[in-house]
Image 1 (cartoon, rainbow, N blue to C red):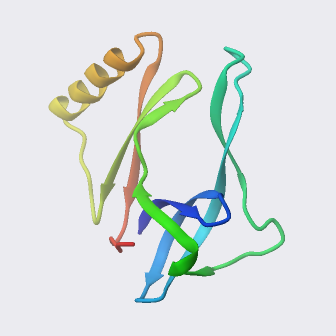
Image 2 (tube, rainbow, N blue to C red; image 1 turned 60 degrees about the vertical axis):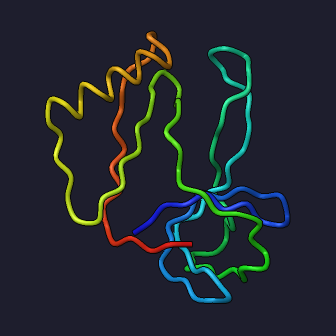
Length: 127
């Protein structure tokens, strides 16, 4: 399983779980649209997510000509947390060195926030 951000020609940005890819199309499931919204804590802009294709279950197939670009999910902030995304095909273990790096990165980004690890486990497919 690979989580990607897709920018479509419509302007929509989607976070999706890629399930299949060929020369002409990409198939994915569990899509959410990335939207900017007002932060209730700071009043500034914050990244939020909302369901995409509300009335459909998927999987969804999009022609590659409708995708402007695809990118890996970036580490980022979510409310009072700094999220560190780790993708592994089969397993991942947390040791003292890994956790120390995540905590150090969080302190550099915002010392008021707490560190979080988001693990994405599964087979890797590329866009």
